[in-house]
Length: 481
Image (cartoon, rainbow, N blue to C red; front, side, top):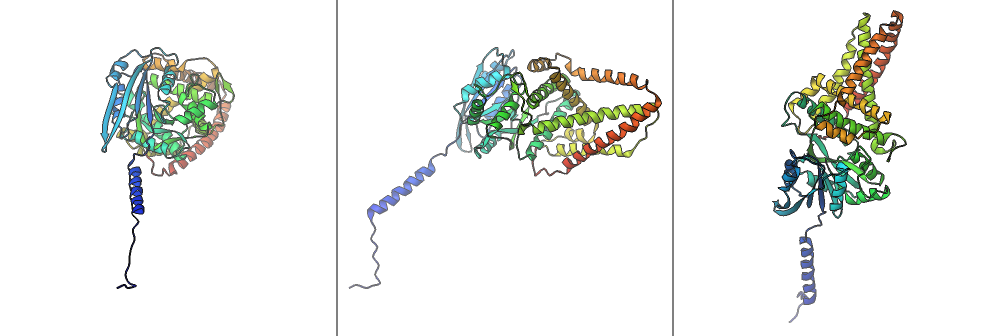
């Protein structure tokens, strides 16, 4: 007996088996681990006995371990090799249920004429088979998620050639009178520089060697286009700035991370800070200057140098307004012509407000960062210190005198050299000569100079104050530095 309501389903056993095999294949593919780029870390170390252990502990505490770590010790005469060697060998950690492995190698390359650049290039030969190169200075420690964030960011866009961490200075173990002041000033300086780059689309002018990740492919492209056998060249005072320019010119982006953070070693003496800042400024001027000095070709119109030009112009204006104000004030008092105007209180108030906003933008701000800004005097003194560095760097550059600024910095960090006193001596002599010259002038001439000088200073100061006000009102878009 049959009926049209009956339903018969014929199942093909071959088709059923094929469906089952297809499902199993898809599940097996889904279960395969995704490709993880390899990261080779290099640490150039010169007399880093006091900090190398902390640096390696910081790397081993990362949520994403570098696949291999090479410590390149060079020109050292302390216990850096002995301390770093205690970490040599394989290290395994289980992070979020996943086992991660890295191995640390310590290389003592002895005397190295190319100093840090030579150590970096030696390290590059050891990790050029990796996808990314992580450069870490021998005195830099990072937040535990720093490598993870850097990898995620550079891996998210093939156009990125390198990403720098957000740098600050750890001031927890800084003691004395001068050191806390200098470190706080450097923290403010770093914060302002980082925020400027953040607000420029996170485009970083300088991929600092302190803690940055590079695409090895981008490094190779930069080497090829500049006919170099190594990524870093020894003839630049700022090897990281030059490499950043070359990576940018090769068609890649140079960025600052939105999340990865690292603390670098700061300068705790006026002598050391002067040598470091003069070297940095001197090298930047070489890159900005039209034409060519030695083997370094100036690139004044390179997009990475726009911020450098602004910084130098700003420092020039700062120098002029401060020196002119002091000279005009003293000159006015000398002939009883000074009349106080409350308008001159506005610029320091705006400057202090801007410094305060910079301090509040620090993710790890401290009370002394706030006080440094609101008290006005500390920030003003530090600005005069920076002006000394600025003027010394330009004077050395324009004099065309050949000096080894790397050696000068090393000497200063050992407590030798008095170059940092040169701006003070020159300023004192200049003021003395101006005072003598001032009293040789007739009263009418003195009055004319004041009548012309104060309005000019007032106009320049007004423009400078307006510029600071614009920066003060600028939205920070939630960024923390």
